[in-house]
Image (cartoon, rainbow, N blue to C red; front, side):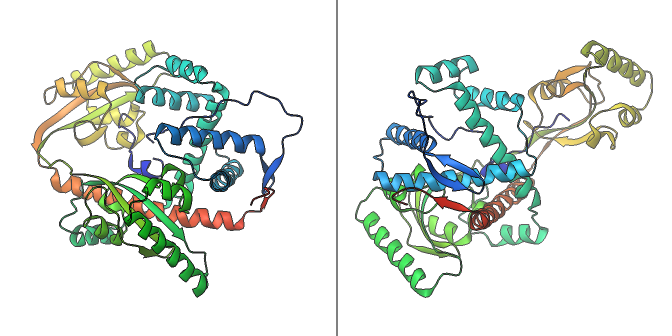
Length: 437
């Protein structure tokens, strides 16, 4: 079908795919024996792998003018990150999650486009910096595999009820508009499952001492890298941009009291003690009436047995049949390969700007009501497009509900992911062979 894929999942994900940071140059010397530093189930992490990843994060921190923590702290943080990645990749393999070369190439093309370059230029920069292309491709492949695993195991299993939606829309703080956003960082001092009162008190004391140091002027990023137990510790605790519905209520309430650069009090949650920093606040644009088009289409796709010229000829025949009086909806039901709309006679309903791919939208906007297009090519195939009506519509309420649903889904997915990952880690066999572990 011609609709753009949703970006709802991009909080975990994600599908705005990005690289974790600069990759380390390949190790030039070949060693006879590569020491095992961690056993993860039936797999191992070697010293060469660990050292390469440590070099990566050092390069990333250097580009952000952040001093790395002590070597022992950095090694411990990186080992834990690699253990969690390895456990997820193992599960993905067990469940048959596959990533082919085309998937990798498409993801790299997206990375290049986001950096305003071509793939060839991106590869040239990587080679200049001493980065092996195959190592880079391997990291991209692993990123995609983990995202697909999370889509299957987490995101696709999350639902948002009408009751949850109504509760959020009616109870949210009036200061927090649905389309606002907050760029935040976090330090978390984790509390183990079934923690003793002594462990809880020790974690609380540690969090309070960290908070005192931040109030006294310590660098939040530096402290997060050294002390935080969060997944984003090595990024200075950065959680990126979050919208109101993606945040737990107590987080949002605290953020609303802060100015950019401000640090929250110590906050308690079931997983530990949190300290937040508001890096930036962004107000969403006020909703305005938007032009909408009621449109339907017939989609045919080229294949190994049907060339694009044959598809075009078939659509031209269907177009003539419509112009000669045959019912568009009946022809769509019989011939369209967009199964979701074919059952509705090709009807896509009222479409907002930006909701379809550019080639489709451009043609759609040029058509008058009841006008029928020539065959139009898009990345999804070839289309016959017919506009049924046009209008200007106030979508503020619809947008608010859609945004709220997406944000609640993201928050629930984040919470489910934390629980799921903690369970995977608890169930895994992990044997450290580091001298300082």
